[in-house]
Length: 131
Image 1 (cartoon, helix red, strand yellow):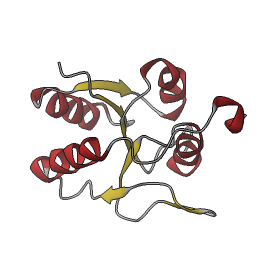
Image 2 (cartoon, rainbow, N blue to C red; image 1 turned 30 degrees about the vertical axis):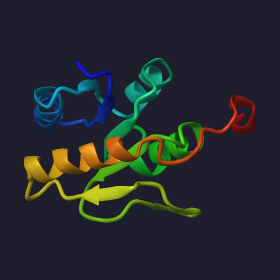
Image 3 (cartoon, rainbow, N blue to C red; image 1 turned 180 degrees about the vertical axis):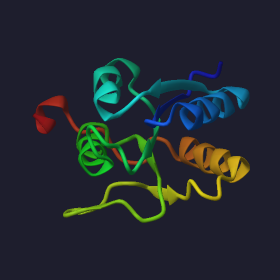
């Protein structure tokens, strides 16, 4: 493994497993999370470079999870899976939005690699600045 960490947050096990396997097939480390709450439990330990999140999470919606990620982990790239741009009142929280339907694995992995090549996307804030 290359040490490049990708967190996959998706409530649909088949899609989550497919994305995680695709990431691993390209020599990257994948860290699946069943939902936004599971992702929050893992994120401080994993410190992912890219986060792939379904925009339609039910327990902790993408609209709540992704702004948290942007504030706490500003250097991470964020890909939202959905059919509309994820926007928060302060502006977009995803670096890019990709459709789930139709699913295009080659396009997806190209975007993951693009964000990894640009990492860190933004400078890290001091932990005390985020509290």
